[in-house]
Image 1 (tube, helix red, strand yellow):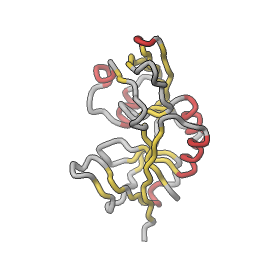
Image 2 (tube, one colour):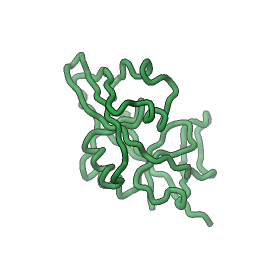
Image 3 (tube, one colour):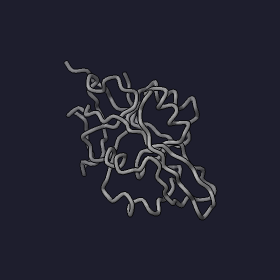
Image 4 (cartoon, helix red, strand yellow):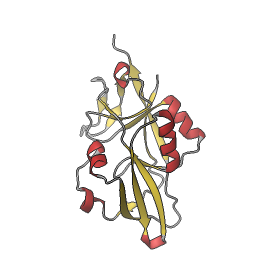
Length: 176
């Protein structure tokens, strides 16, 4: 089984949230953000007029477009989502996003390599038996949020021409 971390493409500008931290607080990540969000939340953003809202956003939390959310539902029926409405007042446009309540799995192998500041995984190795065959999940036990997806899920996303998604492969090892 192959897994990839999925994240927003840095080449695609992401909206700048104007009122996120005043409403959500700083330093909140993953599950904490999901729990703090209302079922429907509204945030004002700024985004360059020429830039489209991407299908995948990594910051300030992992949120996806309707099409991407439908793909997650295809692989994980019954998964809960919360809705985030983004309004770009300066350009008079808006977009709905969904924040999935992804399971958090602690499956990172101790042989993984971290950056000097120990915040970024430079060489990710997963324990296969701990992934539980989950198609999409949040990596537990890390400082930064990592969303991981199976090869099958990633291929499905690319077939649907998801806009703004990047991937990086993690190695997967079985316990000996």
